[in-house]
Image 1 (cartoon, rainbow, N blue to C red):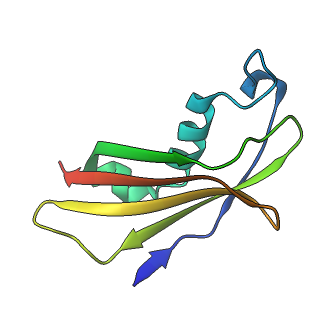
Image 2 (image 1 turned 60 degrees about the vertical axis):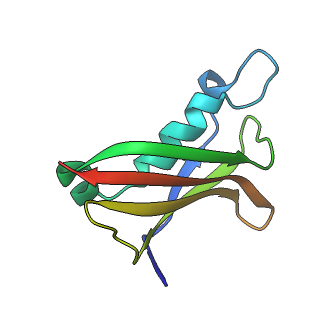
Length: 102
């Protein structure tokens, strides 16, 4: 099973947009990583991130970032699962991060 943290809410701002009016991919990564708990950042290093883009979002959208810790620590690594979604409208990005102990 997974233990999930409370979702963090983000709002799409103009400076989040690319020239096509969609949220820049780097912004998605920032939102995903903002949801990682402080204790993970304090004692671990991000080793890998895998992103699955599922939908676009646009200026003014409200986005929830959720981070879940899997109970699958393997040696000095563990995995977090992430999701960005428009509540009630579906996923925008799903991701997996792999972390190693410092």
